[in-house]
Length: 593
Image 1 (cartoon, rainbow, N blue to C red):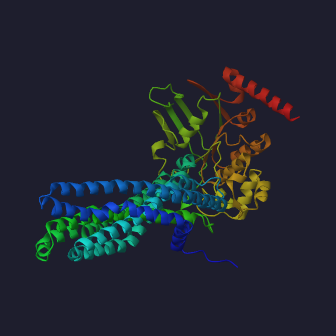
Image 2 (image 1 turned 90 degrees about the vertical axis):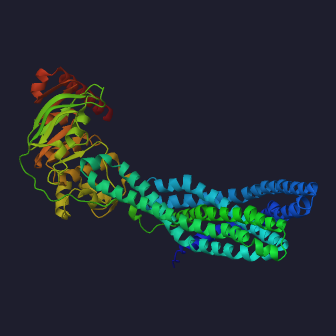
Image 3 (image 1 turned 180 degrees about the horizontal axis):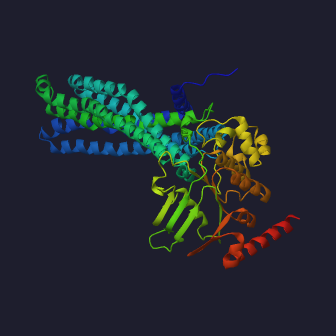
């Protein structure tokens, strides 16, 4: 029988109260040294009154200075108490930090297990950042809360023994300020929580996008992603603004509780003197308020209103993360926006005119003055030595990179206009680093389609690419996909099916089959040649070049275009590449045997 999860506030208080309950003895010792620390507050008003009435006003300056000297001595005693308070506080807080780390690690493991992700960025942030926030906040809250109670009690006790008639001027505004402050804590906590959630959402959104930047640009999804990220940033800004507005409430509470008593005592001085109060008594009462109550209340409001709320909200996030989530958090996945329906025209022309590209203003161009014409049903292989610019050319054609000079046209439309809705889906780039995401197999395969395909359509694509056994091994189209469980070749095969099903009529394979065996690579390329549209392959095997209708050889500043036989005759580099490939193939075959 399952038990309901505890309500969030109970979890917060349970963690804190359990930590305090386990350290009752340390808290008692801390309270004892806090009394020593508060000794100067209790003695300050009485010693000031004695210095004035019994010393300076009585013509006995030595007695006045003696009272002030005793006041200075009490400050030294209070300093000893402060040192002991910090030592006792460390004995309480450091073990609590270790318990908190255990909670966070539990939360990271639960989230990683539930979401299927190899790492949890938000969990790491809690481990490195939020734990320290809770540790420091908890220490501040304990010290300030206990210090406020002891200091306030000492100041009020001293005021009662010195000038009881001044108590009505001090106690009511102090209580009003405290009530106003406490009543605002709930609303402030809600805004503090919203701010922390907004910060986490930005971090999770950015970490999610970082792994798929190339796919985002290749799919022309920048506007959608910009909107998504902007929404998170706007939410964080709004939450921060609302939180800042609550500062006005804290300021008002501080003004009523700390400054109004001083004003009332000054205004009521004639009445106090008329009822027997001396000059020293009035100054002593002002001392209790200005040196005792006012700093204590100011520190309490500032700490509880800032650090204390941050403690509760941050600890709440940690305890929430320690609970096993029923499902993956909704903010961990970006909303999907599928392409609009487009046709697959049989004749589309890609044209490069004098294209030049370099990585940097003063760098040598990788591609210089390149002209290329790719017809709607063409099959082009791009070859060349490593680093010559093959992948760069693929990214330029896909729109990932913008050339410094020249034009790229698709049906006469410049590259800069490819993000228009009717042009955005005309090409698809499959890089070597195949990208799949957590979801069902079908969701990964039909991502580029405007509507869900039928099982026969999925079967047709899988059969064309030789992926039937892989689909069966994964458990069918509705099975959940865990990217970490797939090999590099399996991920590449799934992304090839995704590109095959897409409405794009220009498919760019940038070594997208490098992890497949030669037979699987041949079947994949053959499937794309039978599919309507053009195919551009960054070749890394002789067989890929031989299957192409035309071959583009990149050779630094030069480029040669032709068939296999033409290039063998006119391109020394191509002859060297073919010889290298053939030698490599023979070595691989020998090692296999």
